[in-house]
Image (cartoon, rainbow, N blue to C red):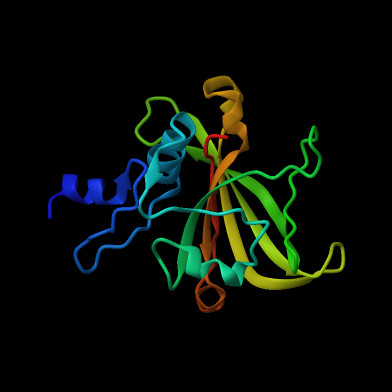
Length: 191
């Protein structure tokens, strides 16, 4: 199977074609690849679909319910396109609550740069969130971690509706506990 066939297997336009990769191949994109090959195309074309990335409203599901919704990576990590859910219709605060708990941002957002550029160019940001059971501020911290990816300066470069779109990468709790650090991945998608 050639590189072009692999790329065609990973990306599709609007249809859920089964992903056929040879043994040993895994969907494990770098932060830059998530932004460049999956988030930007989704923001520019809402019909863009990646075979390995599902769509989900992360506020309607608990992290342990997401595995069954994943298109790939059913054991360790899961990728989803989703829209930001604002707490208030005209507000800027993001709703990160579920029925059983909430996602809480930790640390500083990481800048994602375009590789190979003559001058370092920021193309996106990565936010790390941890899931807490219960309600803020007294929730119980869990081992669930999510990385949320968004375009940087999306209102200037991309359509204004794109600022509500994201892609997420979610890792299973078991894998998170036994590995170094877990990540969830959220990416932008057109509204």
